[in-house]
Amino acid sequence: MIDEMRELARRIAGLPGTRTEVTTFPSGAAILDVWREGRLFVMAHTPTWKGFGVGEVLDDEGFLEKYDFFSEDFTAAAEHLWKIVQAAQPADAGPPIPGGANGPPPGSDSGQRVETGRERP
Image (tube, rainbow, N blue to C red):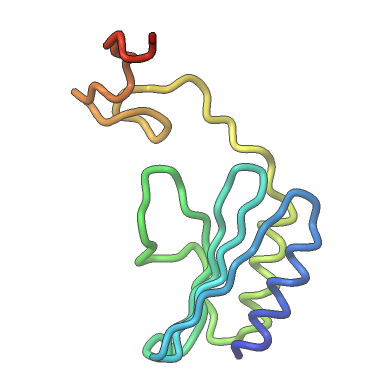
């Protein structure tokens, strides 16, 4: 299964503007991360699931616990991942919105430039 996932990563990486990374774990789990058009897609497998989860990681999400697609069959999961990655359009982040997926958390000062004078010699 790991070899098949690595081969899928090589195939997907052939799409223009796409980067892939396969991470394996001693437990037998593996994750294929795919970055394309400013978006992140994931295929994950753990022996306890006895299958493959596929989905897109959105800006307001961390490690996925639930996936948009799940299959016990690697081929079906690989085909689904290929389809959603190939169809990916650039993410339109829009202007930063405090507390939004593309902005600082509410009440954060990180979204504002603070003049300290240190930038000047």
